[in-house]
Image 1 (cartoon, rainbow, N blue to C red):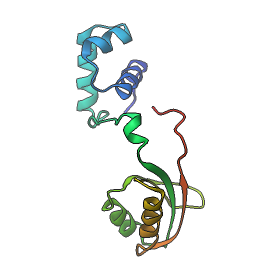
Image 2: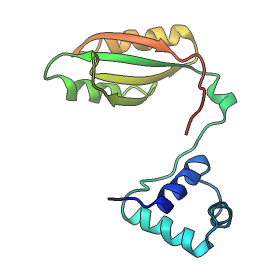
Image 3: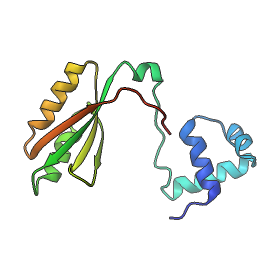
Image 4: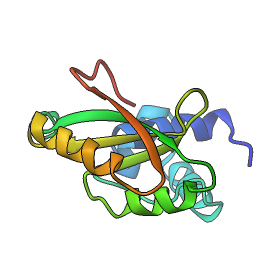
Length: 143
């Protein structure tokens, strides 16, 4: 599925504010409202836009301690570990990565101690060989 430059521009605006009105988006992109609406419908039909989500205000987000938890998984245990991680609500994202680790989880807790408990909980899962965590100090930008 190849996206046009116009599609990319539209997606960039929606990433900033998925609640923006069709008229606001049209003004920003310099196109008609009908064009914006038809492009959004096309992108939804094609599955490019798979849904819309909530972005929490920075003040609320900063109330959480956030950490990247790098995970090494024992051979042939990946599916079991992924399923177990999916059941932990504090794990907000999970990525399969190349390099010395197999997975990187993005976890949140209200305290540093909570991140410690989360990391220990992940490390205790069957199939997890090792974990290393890095607490996020600041987010410089987000798209």
